Image 1 (cartoon, rainbow over the protein chains, first blue to last red):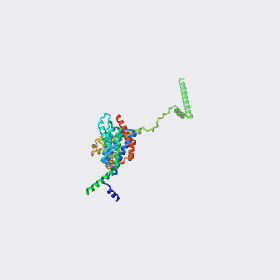
Image 2: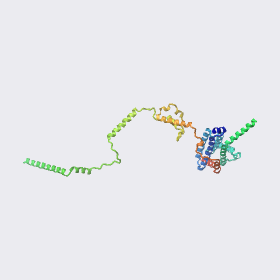
Image 3: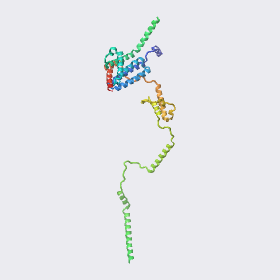
Image 4: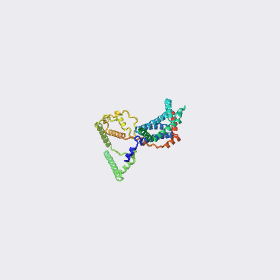
Amino acid sequence: MLILLAASLTPAESPSPAERKGGYVILDTYIAVFREMAAKGSNGILESNLNNIMTQVVKAKTQGEIDDIFYSRFARLMAVTKLVIVPDAGHILKPIIERETRRFVEDILGEEAAAAPELGIGTLAESITQELLNLQIYLDTKDQRKKMMEEFYKKFDDTAKK
Amino acid sequence: MENDLKETWEDEFQTLIREDQDRALATFRTENFEARVRARIADTAEEPRRRPFALPSIPARGVAMALVIVAAVAAVAIVFWPRRPSPLLTAGDVRALWTALDGSPGVKILSAPGTSEAARPGRHSELPSSFERTLSLLRAQRQARGNEAAPGLAEKPVPHLSFRDKVRILYRDKVIERALLLAIEKSKEV
C-alpha cells in the first residue's frame, strides 16, 4: 500500500535511477580513460577506449539510460576529442578540426577564448574539463530542474485559471 | 707266404682299431666326455648380443595374422561404409558455425560474410547429427541471451567518482591536457 502511494506521488517524468546512473558511469569512464592515458602514455589505449566508450554510450541511449540532451553533448565531446587525437599527417583534416574545435571552445569558454590566433591544447583541455563538469552538474540537478519546472507550470496554470 | 703276411697285417690293423675304439669308449665313459664337449662349445661360442630395448618377442605368425585381420576390417569398412555426399564441411557449414558461435562467451568472430546463405532452412540436414545438435544448442543459447536485457553501463566495473573527485582529477592532475599532449605527439609521429 505504501509502495503504491509512493508511486502515485512520484512525478511521471522524473528520471529513473538507471538513467542517472548511466550518465554518471559514462563520465567516470571517460575521465578514467584519460587518467590512464596520462599515467601510461599510450595513444592506442586512448583511441581504443574512446571507441569502446562511444559504443557504450549508444547502447545506453538505446536502453534509455541517458537522455537526448546528455547524449548530444557527450557525443560532441567525444567527436572533438577524436578529432584532436586522430592522426592527420598530411593536414587534410586541419580545416575541419580547426572549425569544430573553435566552435566547441566558443560554446564552452566563450568567443574571446575561441578567437585566439592559435588554439592551444590548454584551452581545448579547459573546454573539455568544463564540459565534463557541466554534464556532471546537469545530471546532479536534473531531478530538481524538472521539479522546479513542474512547480512553475502549476503556478502558471493556477494564475491562468484565476 | 704272401697270403699269410697279408692276414697278419690285417689282424694287426683290426687289433689296433679295436684297441682305439676300446680306449675311446673307456675315455667317454670315465671322463664325462659329453659334459666336456658342451663346456668347450660354450667357451668357444660367441655371446648373444643384447638388444638396446627389451622388446617382447612376438611370433611372426601372430603378427601376420594381426595384419591380415586389420586389412580385412579396413577393406570391409571401405566397401560397406555409408558414403556421404561431402564428408568435409562446406563453406556454408563454416558460415553457419560462425553465425552460431558469434557472440558466444570467449568467441569473437571478426566477420561472417554470407550468413543469410548459411541460415537457409534445410541446409543443415546434410550435416552430421552431432554437429547439427551443437549448432542448434548454440543458436538456442544465443537466442536466450538476446531475449534477456543486455547489461547496461551501470553494471560495468567503473570506479565511482564524485564531483569533488572529478574536479581534483581534472584540475589538479590536469589529466585531459596531459593525455591530449601525449596523444597529439603520438599522432604526429604516424
